Amino acid sequence: MDDFYRENILDHYNNPRNHGHLDHPSAAAEGVNPLCGDELAVELEVHDGVVTDIRYSGRGCAISQAAASMLSDVVKGKPVDQLAQIGKEDVLEELGIPLSPIRLKCAMLSVGVLKVALSELTGEPLPPEWNDPSDGIEWKSA
Amino acid sequence: MAVAEFTTPLDLEKIRADFPILARPVHGKRLVFLDSAASSQKPRQVIETLVDVYETSYANVHRGVYYLGARATERYEGARDIMTGFVNANDRREVIFVREATEALNLVAYAYGRTFVGPGDAIVATEMEHHSNLVPWQFLAQQTGATLHYLRLTDDGSLDPDSQQRLAAIENVKLVAVAHVSNSLGTINDIPALATWAHERGAVLVVDGAQAAPHRPVDVQALGCDFYALSGHKMCGPGAGILWGRAELLEKMPPFLTGGEMIRTVSLEKTTWNDLPWKFEAGTPAIAESIALGAAAQYLQGIGMEAIEAHEHALTAYAYDVLDGISGVTQYGPKPPNRAGILSFNVGKVHPHDVAQVLDSEGIAVRAGHHCTQPLMRRFDLQATTRASVYLYNGRDDIDALALGIEKVKRTFSV
Ligand SMILES: Cc1ncc(COP(=O)(O)O)c(C=O)c1O
Image 1 (spheres, chains in turn cyan, yellow):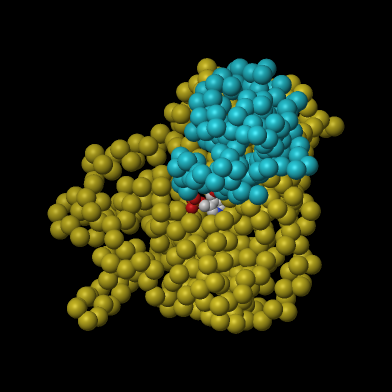
Image 2 (cartoon, each protein chain N blue to C red):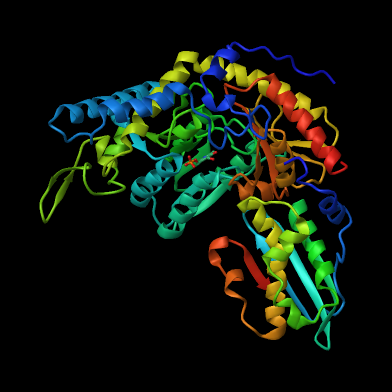
């Protein structure tokens, strides 16, 4: 319990990678968790099928913000068709801590907005596990 | 800065021994439970009552000719008598068992609201309400064509007299709804004054007592309100609560839920309603829970509601000063002494979820979020706060543990 806020989480929280906005995003999306007010937006820049740049912005708890920062590092430079495989497990692995169901939603906000942005980009429907109205999270493509 | 001295009329050690859960460590630490505003812990006396009902006196109420049916009815109606005394109602027919405050408020919104509020009428609520005492009125306004107005708040989280002045000109006010005590800020509202204000306009006053009834003596006659809702689970009881309402209003109101128990005679064409209070208790009630709510009220009365109020009053003053002395902590709501035992704060820019998570690692339970008061959060431009709420089993050691926990939050997030 005591090492919940591991150094890597605090590092990403205090020094977020890829934070801010892009001048000419190819795709963008936002997510809000009304339960706790966490908000997250993502912008992607894509050239020749590769994510050349990514920016996150938003506000929320250390878990949601650190997860976004970690994920942005993973996504940057990857071909778009590889990103479909990124899932909840990858975020959990990056965070490296067990999460209660409530905190899990904080952690998954960033991968959720990424999925919405990708679906906007590729025109493919949002995978059903990200389209579950029962989880209460509101997604919006920009 | 001087910290308010803490003295209490309560025998804290004895009280804590009544609550089995307080003896169970969390993450290897002593449990510091500071979330009673969400739901309180239960004393042995209440837990044992639940078990005892099921082991000795359980059957459905108001029907059985046999021994157990009579025994269950006697205990259930006995609990109503206890609750009648608990809120100092002058008539047991005015005390309706419900699930909790939410159901009580909805009962008023449906049975009273949809009968006596119509197009062109006005409803007045406040900006500090829990969603339970706001959404039912929004919905009522939508469905009836009435308009909903809000009393606004001052910067310290009290009702703003200016806004009351501004609303004074509104006509056809039929219903005013207000919390006795705010669950997010600890504001204590002046119910007798609001009752006068409502009655001058020919409106009824509905009071959400969820955060008051567990913590201070409630006398519905002295308060002068027309309806009063409370939740048993916040006052050491299980999942049962009451709605108190003036008999003459309850008499005029149609039923809320219909079905068994609330009827006198039913033919295929027509039904006549049962007498108060059963007219509003359709179906099989929460029998054991209602009986145990009576046990909870008796437990609290045994300690003394005045003593509990004095205890929390002193502990809140102490806690407010302690938090005030921690750099980086911002508190919201009125300053003691005009404040109930609810402390709402932020630590630097740390998200309340992270504050609560670090505190949890120290065995400290607090609430983080908007506390079901989103309009209030917006009023103060907040996303969320951390909320520590005290009850009769909390002491100075809990507040000192909270202060140490907050220091850990500050270290973790370099505040
Ligand atoms: C002021 C207030 N009103 C109403 C409620 C709703 O209580 P319940 O969920 O027991 O109906 C609460 C509970 O948090 C509250 O604090």
